[in-house]
Length: 327
Image (tube, rainbow, N blue to C red; front, side, top):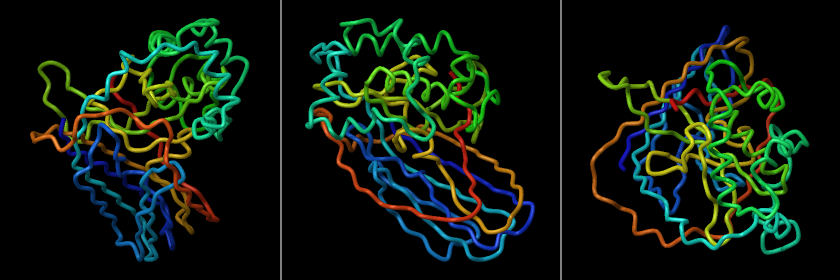
């Protein structure tokens, strides 16, 4: 599938901002099943400096600084890309989830995977998460089968309810009330797997949505999306989307991945002055026609190449969470 993705964000400030330094995770990654043909970022007011970097997890980050006083910041990213169906995992040899968890714990060759077993700022292992997962992850059960069933369980047992949570809602609250949005369901999945000793990462991106029958497609009505992934020996990272009870296909656009949402926030920064602010987000994922630029997939790498950059800043912080996505 070929897509044009436009992601617009507007910050309206109560008082003028005198100085702003911002980080954007808006350029999609290149993956074995995803090719980015073109990307551009437009910022108003015009930044005094702007740089493209790669973060520790290999994600594309756009760093820019605005020095002119402003009471509104507009950030618009536009990406042209192609996404194809990921390589099949049907022939992957089965492995018991608890056996693999032990392998991850002791084998040095899996060091690139091990770091996704540890606690992160928004997701911490907990006995309540482990107990919830134990119903599916019974001793000796095949890892892939358990993950697929667990994906379906979250979809069935949690209610998709926009505006019921925000970035500050504790994971324990989401688990207890069993409601939230895609970000929450991805965090629950990641937390449960880590509580079992399994590696799990948070994936941010977009999902092509279709309007209800008889309704016109509304430009800008799409939203950011989030799902989870775990490592499958002999295959690589297996993505799964508990919000929609699917394994991502060519309709999922991957932007970034990390330990949790805090690693991949679409837009965050530090500003001097400004006071209270209101944020408005619009996303449009439009399907296009084209000829494939991606060669047939041969598989996924067992280890992730990573580059680390250090980011430091002081001052007030602002962040943008992913909006609701239709199930």
